[in-house]
Length: 385
Image 1 (tube, one colour):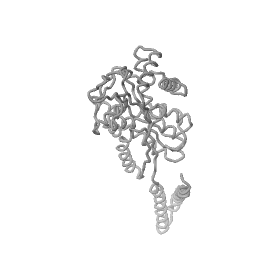
Image 2 (tube, rainbow, N blue to C red; image 1 turned 90 degrees about the horizontal axis):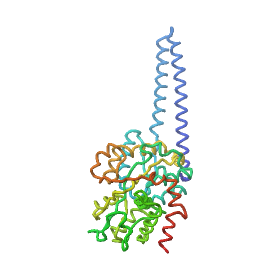
Image 3 (cartoon, rainbow, N blue to C red; image 1 turned 120 degrees about the vertical axis):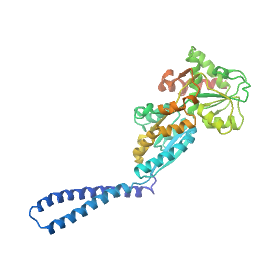
Image 4 (cartoon, helix red, strand yellow; image 1 turned 60 degrees about the vertical axis):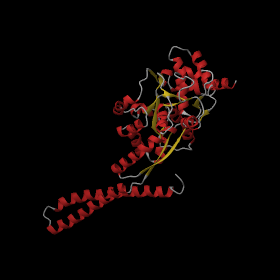
């Protein structure tokens, strides 16, 4: 809150507190009045009764007026949503629906400040405080865990929402050039000599982490050991001359600028690009990873901004049939069972769909692959050698 806003906000809190005090005082007087009138009814005159009746009516109106003014003066609420780059199209459809619903039910205006970018970079900004998010919708649970470890989100965030906090899903897709001149059909083909791969950087992007895990799991979860997985992943990243900062930049580089032979991206992002006029052939590998995108309320910030009730309501709304249908329209794989059934025929079935848990869970994944000096750094060093 800026210094210029602070006096206004303090004044509003004082007014609301005085209203509550006035209501309680008037209610106490009403109780005294009700007790008194019973005594007066025993033998008192009609004139006296009428006088007390008028006093009681005045008190009732006063209480109702004060109570009503308390809700009527609810100020507008502003929420800060920080999300990863490719969710903007979905939130542009979902947010107006929530705003309208909240206005109808609570007679309160809600506005959103939104920020989109690479999930890892967005997470760092929230932790640093340069993005004071009330809500985060990020590319992977690892990023929410980092915010929790920084003390901004309470532990157990994943059990406070449906579906373990996962609100949208996708899988990895391999996009090729027209006619697929390099013959790319499986993950293994990405390691071929002469193939130029466009992918994002795990240091800044959520899709990049999912890509890396898809590469690794395609070997380690189909009979190969860590040595074979490391050899394969090293070859793939040698074929990746540029690592973009996020999924959207990777798409622009491949589709708009014509860079690369192969693009690795979210299934939903690839399909959306096709609908927007940049359609190219793509493959959904039969060994694939479930890309699970979490949402969470940032506890420290909503308490600071006094926005918890509305922020939690928005998170809950994201799981509704109405909101999940908007995700589905943009080719996310919904988590709402009703919507999942509605769109099941739109997504190709996957023979082996593994999860982050199959690779040990996020704590192990972070230490093994992405911590300073871990496997990804070694792969990058081998690429430069």
